[in-house]
Length: 229
Length: 254
Image (tube, rainbow over all chains, first blue to last red; front, side, top):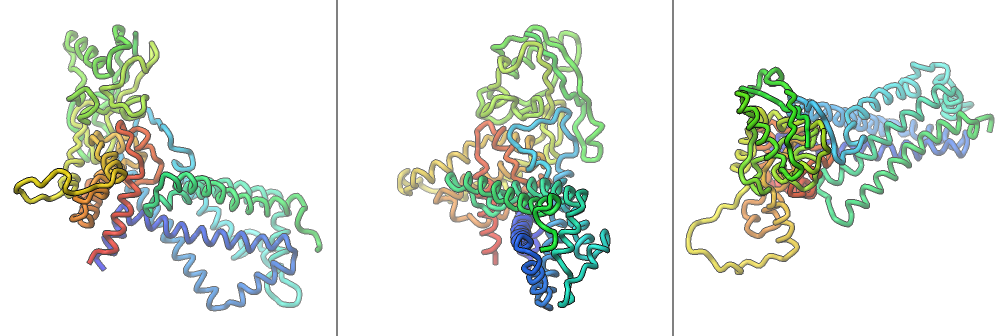
């Protein structure tokens, strides 16, 4: 197993860990958005989806623990690498400058940590019911589980919450737009024809994910979704 | 033309413990620069004036002054080798600056490149990385026929693109994380595309990466600043090559 520990400790091992865990988290984001888009199909559809997820029982817990492990690995590796990067340049330039690096690529740690704060808030909001216990307590009629539809529409009916969620999607977009295309480079995919394609697709996919999330919160705020149907 | 220079002055070599208090930026005015001078000639003129005044001249690294040796390389206005792309500091000319320009000149900043004096840094870390495997082992004996080993032209071109690296260190200096991955990637990619490089393929990837990590360089975050400042315009493709070679070598390691 020494090859594994030396790989894990190496610079490229750290990068690959970021790429692989990043890809897994991206997969979760896709399923999260697809599930939430059921909101547009009305109360019954999304509540049925929520009930289906909860009825998975032990399997749901396997997924939750797996997701948490991947998330912790992603954050911990990011912190380890960033710390090493800081040590690698003890004296900063008096006149810093860049030629072609974009804002998204230079602020990955900042956007990542911002997302961490947002995700904690998001879990306290919808999963643990700490920030808005009233919303969290909404129960579906009959079946007994949460009334996800009511939770979401009541929450995002509050413009402050809806706008806060939408603003965080800008950060998510920045993080994803650099992260997605970085994955290919990190695992060694670089090609005259495919690399420009990968960059464009990463940008569009990041836009779709963040835009989709923001669309959901804002459409509730503007009354396009919600009400009594 | 007239230029105002802000130059990092540091009398003694940096030590790891007090990197930060080692030197300071000093302002100089130079009234008799010519647009036809190279950047290093402009520094020569400054140094002549300093010597005439009895001051210590600015120490900077240089050798061939024709863009092939990799000795020169200072950070000019935050960009290694200055504002012209694909150009070493010695091949940069003062016509790239406006009359009256304020120019900030700093040494390359990295823990693995300690400052020896003023603008000179010790790039011995690059030499140690090269010694760890950026070569092919060849038994001595009668040389074989030059064209006995056929190499497809595209492969030869890829190897040569990587081999143009002059080891100046601009990639490290430009990287936000002071990562040496463009340099090390160039070494890996240089041999990866040649049949002679296949024999030590896996050990080379492992040894180069571990030597790079031991020197205390940072980790690549794919910002591509390195390829933008590389005087030989080496693409970050070589970093992808290195990543793939290292992954392969680690997976196959016994």
